[in-house]
Length: 155
Ligand SMILES: [Zn+2]
Image (cartoon, rainbow, N blue to C red):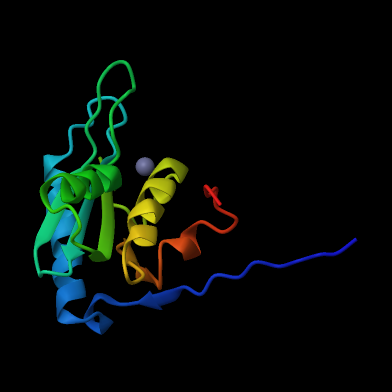
């Protein structure tokens, strides 16, 4: 038997340690939570994306009673794909709040969103920096792939 280990490098930062564009992404992700429609989960997720052409795009979760809505992350990524096809995404920030305000710990995307974001990264010429926003700190990951080890691919 062989045993293997998977490792992911996560940087834990304060807001002030982020670059100017990363700070803008975090601000926009927090603003985007206001566009969330979450009458069922009451969990408001906002995502903000920076494209290589300098355009920022926001997304927010949108729910319905059949639970066939969409998460904030995919809302933003599919918006980018629909409105800026072929333009690479360089970074994404994800923030969330509930009835108590913004979440304390960094908000992490679900598996569906990880797989969807990975598709954009695989089609891009560069990794997508991922910022997971919490009130206590912000996690910065070097790529979407680092969020999804042993991912499903078409090989
Ligand atoms: Zn999701």
